[in-house]
Length: 336
Image 1 (cartoon, rainbow, N blue to C red):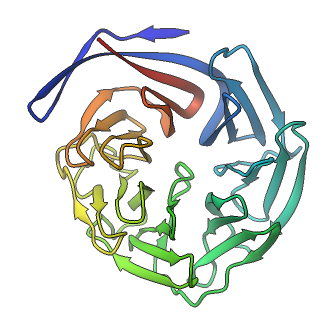
Image 2 (image 1 turned 180 degrees about the horizontal axis):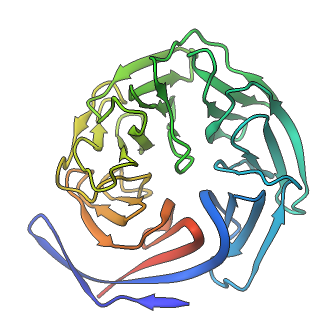
């Protein structure tokens, strides 16, 4: 099913761009999806009721879905390396599933039995290194690490602030570049944890982001390189609130500048920088909107009122895939 929207006239600075934006529904199902990956020309997803599957980007009739467990597990994470996908269910016990890409054979490869286990994001830094971030029962930073085929808990002495946690909103509160991994926290304290991949040291930086309540803070981050990054979020209990819910950094996360405060579409769950744009072009999505920036996140234009979408990924410079409640959709820009 396709929906073709009329030409939208979008103002960015002093330039006027005329664009057609089309939406195509790729998947309809009774499912909530908060994590997607792109591979082999397909959108791969994990979601509720232990569901895992794919839909073809060019032919949506080409799709397949399996169940990773007979239990009704909820998945909000998904990651991949060359040969496999990985997904972790929320809540304890947290099972780490490995799914072979070619045959879609799944197996449990690691289990976290701690009572507070609740995995918010799972991110591959490179083919041999990945991190998964979980809530913790002792107010200490909890990272599960996959390194050279082995699973372990990442040793550290970082203590989180009271009420500081993270949100399993879109599998995107972890990001990485060449030399660093960043983790965004939220809740009563919303900070950036920066892991140096060379010396394994973690620095912690405060942010001016909205925080103080369990529903507030950074929900999603993305970095284009070791210096430029963006964070989005807000308050899921006040979706229209748009104060101090977008920020950018140009020094690798040490300092953050609030952007478009009071001048954006509100609560946002996922942000993705357009590949090869060096941070200039950015797409973001929340439960009530799709928004776009063409000036490094300084100003934003709501380009759609599509609702119930939580996560997004760029396919190419004119195509973005979104997923959320009961569906996966593809959006294309067609310049005139």
